[in-house]
Image (cartoon, rainbow, N blue to C red; front, side, top):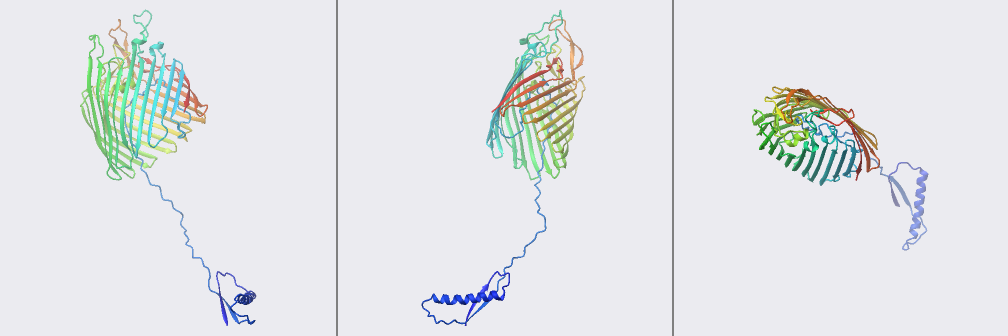
Length: 595
């Protein structure tokens, strides 16, 4: 008897007996048919006995699943410490001396793309004012960058006697940079030419022996040239960071005064570990200047003065930062050859700073003790006050020791608030005082003793998704003088407010406002003869500065926009420097082409 074995696999249901018998019958019928297909065997016509046995041995089973009842956890982002560098510069007058300036924002300037890198602007207004600017720069590139920025603004007439108070300012700035990894090499080239008039004279009265001067006889011009080459690697992840440069600046006026200045600067940092670093910051300036002595009744032909001015300063420091604490301990060593007052040429000041982060990216407080020399040059002084006299005794300011404390805060999204209080003892701190022989020109005067300076500074900025921007900056300065009667032409309070509002994609509106408290000059009684001696009358306070500027920029096409500006809209002919009123209301209208 033959036995047929069938293995039943993956069975999940039982079969009935009838179904099993049907399978057995089908198997019996299939066997004779298979035998008939074999020619070697004879067909006997006899069914052989066979037994069919169905065996179920295999059952499919899935492995037991591993269940995870814990929630998915994302790793916390790596905490990056925000390093803030603080600088505490001395009070500087604004470069435009609050003369209504032309500052135009293009439509949606905050958009990062597309960046064409090029635009030209042109505008005209009352007082015979013309404004032009060309901005030609490369587009975004990870390998290099280059550009040229050219500006010009001029007014044929001014607030006093038409052309006698005319002005013009022209400048060109050329730059280029090469990027290699985390480092960069670059160079800049600057040219400048400015023309002003000494229009701060007293108006001639009827029958007076003094005639109104001609425009050419009270002309003053400045020529500027500056070149600089630099290299830097500021990546904080690098063990060695550096920022170094070498440059040269030249300045000359329309008389015989000139200044040649070779400048060096470097800052090097070396990481001792993840939390500590050693830094050294150094600056040097070597000036050769030439000037004519101030005229006097005794000297008909003033002599020509030439001198050299040396300035060297370095600040080594050890910096430590861990968790919420940042500490810097060092010292500032400096040397200045200037002798405006009886002050030592060499200085040594502490350089200590402590910062504590109360809430990361939200609130940080800091305090420190320091001091430093501050380089003073004719190049910079003439941007503050263009009506300077001849024969100036220019000297570097010794600021220190200085104690400061403040905080930086971002209490809400888009809102920033910073405040700082500083007290310093300054020597060789200059003030502007009009000259008794020619009150239209200003001398530099110094207090023979140290001047105590208290400064309280505050900044507030709100930026709402690049749609609305509003900010203000306030400074209060209190000067403790020993020999000078007043802090001449240094106002105690100065404040500014600015804002922009993007009404819609095509229209941008901006506002700028300035307020300076009154400052002091001196008035003189008129001389009886031309060129005679004037006697001091009394100290005179200038009117407070209140200046409001508005502008609007409308984009006609993606490449063409038009703009209009209104300057000094409160129409106050204030005098930032005694005897020099500014223009009243003046308006400009023009267009911008981007390509």
